[in-house]
Length: 110
Image 1 (cartoon, rainbow, N blue to C red):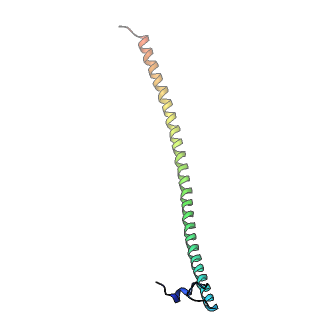
Image 2: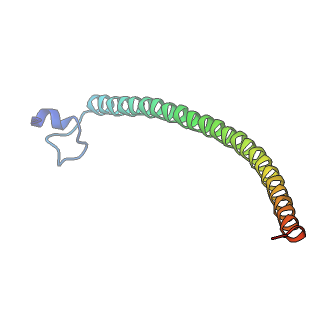
Image 3: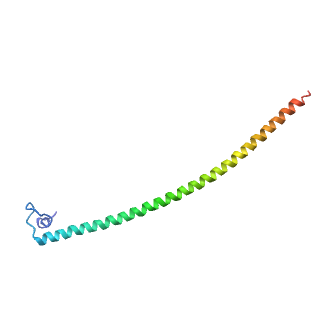
């Protein structure tokens, strides 16, 4: 718990424990400014840390986007190859079916 004498350092009005002298006011202003400076430094450090983390996230997102694009290109190329193979398989299957039908229709000698 703070004593009345210590609390007087923080009051500037008659409601405080006593009137502040000019020296006390000056000392109080210096302390308050010191607190502002310390908090400003802390804020700048936190701000820099956040900026660094944001930059890391941006870099990782850019790399991820590039990897997805590369993966998508590979996927598209593979799918195009599969479509070609499926078309060839379909054509060959249709040719086999036609040849089987011709064989049955043309040479049914039972």
